[in-house]
Length: 336
Ligand SMILES: Nc1ncnc2c1ncn2[C@@H]1O[C@H](COP(=O)(O)OP(=O)(O)O)[C@@H](O)[C@H]1O
Ligand SMILES: [Mg+2]
Image 1 (spheres, rainbow, N blue to C red):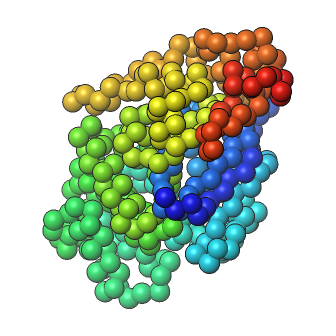
Image 2: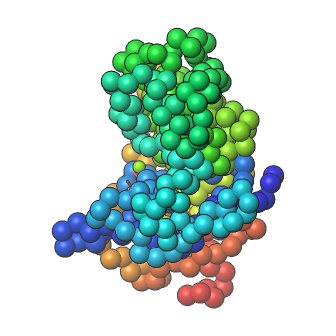
């Protein structure tokens, strides 16, 4: 595996202001994305997956801000760009976003414009970032549509979104994200709205695109089953913190954190009626505006000790890249 790093997130913190409350959505998140690989970010709804992605892209709503840490992107020349330090409307950031790093948003089906043809919506992104003729753009879009499994792409180019099924629209969203051949693709729950057969097709397609184009990918999902099928490395996130990070083998064969173990036990069942959402783990995620002294998972954990309620766990390195944020693994209590 290529060990070159393309994205480095260091101690990222993102907060929202909601009236008088402060919501701590991302707390001290650090991870690296290796070139050409797929990293899964997995966790229950509300744990901070989308906010992590939006922070990387610097696409936070007005009441949100990055209050600490760094997002470093290494371009093709190896130059580091600290994305969070760019002005949100700077030309440099806009060029990186869209051309070098692109994102498929959660609920992407709503983001296609009903009044424009599919082809024009894909080529718009291309022509914004590359100085090419209409004809060249048309050819690039047609070949991308073909690559994404449309058998008559020239005709499809002139169709409108309402002519397309959910799965076809999702492939169009992938085309929009991939048309500039980005170095990094961030896909936020890209298949959640689709039925199971189509989910599998889209994921296979994403893996194929990732391999043929060498795109480094962050795949966000609440489903461990999807992670198992597609990812090289996994970040398990709970209440805005990475509680465990490891490669696929480490996370699935020797999971450490009680939360990871619970997630693995409750992989959503895929059936013909769609995805059955399971009550993952008893208890609810705490409100992000509460100040929690100890471990945020303590109330739901089977192994809670006294220290878990009083002190934030310190990360332990288990084995190489495998790390866990849990007092159970604090060997000899050296951090306690
Ligand atoms: N615009 C916002 N204003 C206030 N709080 C927000 C906003 N967006 C997200 N949050 C909060 O941030 C936390 C993480 O949300 P999110 O990243 O969307 O979770 P998910 O893991 O489901 O993608 C949640 O507590 C959510 O309520
Ligand atoms: Mg989300």
